[in-house]
Image (cartoon, rainbow, N blue to C red; front, side):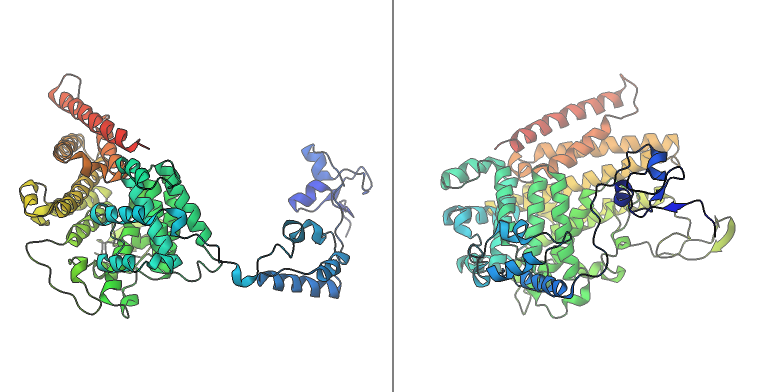
Length: 555
């Protein structure tokens, strides 16, 4: 078959790099100095400088040596001088001489024996003193634990007394991640921590968190991800929270990705994986799942289309309520039995479950399984009728978003009324009945629940205002509701102590700022009472945020 196309015997450099067929020009003979059609058409310089690789299979002895090299490298041992010379004699352009590779960077005498490869891993003495470690852990158990319950307190205290962090590298990594979260969350304590241990190396909170990250990286063995456990999940999530508290959202995202991978690999989201666990492990894993899920929600709350965690196959629809932790404090949960919670002392787990419900109103944790009415849609120019629903929703006309948002708002309004007295919106009169450390824990949980509650309310109302299907009169009513939510949040913030607000890091400030920012776009005419009300709220929010930002900027 006649063809005017002439294939070049040697492809030009540009075609080789792009991995496309090189065609010689009709005007010139295909030679190393010719110009191919593609370079001619693209006005590129056509060169033939790249060396031609040897064609055909390599020599059998070279193949044997290449596999021998790969096998010995996998065992983390290095070649002796005779092996080195043997490989150098069979070097090819595809495989440079050994002097350019591993022997140039590490000679056999410098290579560590396999048995001692991990003997120089970091330990607690490289991080801080025992006295400073005790200060970190006490601060965690008294101030941070209510909102980040990643331990079973009696077991955790027993592990600290037994100095488990000196014999268990995974627990050591988990422990220093807790310390990183404490340092990131409590900016006003950093100076006292430095005084307690003058040899503590980091000079700022960010340096502390980055130092912990470097120690965790040194702890990771080649099989780190092949052997997942609870401590590795906790180390990743806590390090992410520490970065998040310092405002480093991207680092939080990547740490969360690692934590989520551990969570799904250990099947925290499948209730059937809990069958062989004791009561302590079951409670910890349930909290771990929800901490991971809520962190995921907080990273992308403004995306309306990302509407359900179950759409990402994180857990079965039937598992949702079975994965809720039981409403009992850690000291009443034993490995083989669960004791009753005293009625006069509500469990902190009740507040944790309330947070789960609040976050579930922002992003639906379950699909709506109720069958939609009979609908007709036009798909690919063919009219089709549908009953029921499908998993992906591709073939069903969705329910108007305003109805879904309204239902979530109604569910959200029911949550505060079901809280125990120490965590209710007007809990000041109940705090005196508890010791100071317990009262602080209740107050911290109370702040987290109600600020998050108002934040979710504000986001849902903001979404409804933005919908084109909402009438003008309804939109103005929603704006008044938004102003009311902002004023209630403002009243709560003014009633809470600064120490409680500061113990939640930049995450709390972010939620407050999002609620306040909505008021900047209010539709009221200048000089009206509604406009003045919004302006006063904005000034009050700015004052509170300025105080919090000043605290967070320390160290």
